[in-house]
Image (cartoon, rainbow, N blue to C red):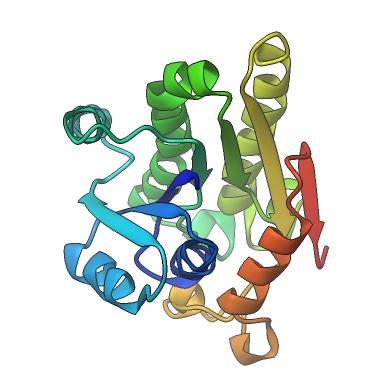
Length: 221
């Protein structure tokens, strides 16, 4: 049994990964900003075990508090899944400055903050970081400039981790996948019909099926 910490675990892909990994008998640490959503996911987990922690990963102080809580509860993480992410879509000149900050703070800084905070533990226990990057980290896309920039940053961060972790027991995996039918698109008309996309459950199943600890996983690119 592994202890798997998943950010953005209150909905979408994070919630589905949690359910499916829990079904395999792993302990899942559900992390997100909204306690009610995390509690809902926890109730839906029928097999395995789980715990919940509210944390805005873009806030380094909250990340430090999360680490203290994990240590207090003697929770040792084996796999960190940096899944939490937000988007900002449209012509660059029309994207509000606050949205740009939110995308970069959550997608980039949040991933870096949490990885940095857990890296010592992961090195000691031979653990792994899995960064959910999306195909936006592979090529530029129209009206996705800020989102793509954030995912390219996470891609570069992950590839640098490969180098940094070469002589340690820890490792890192980059997951590149296409869009999903989730509320991620609800506040934008960038994707006109999200129902044509695969469900988070299907994507989670693909990730878990393909995951063998390799450096990169490609899904529906």
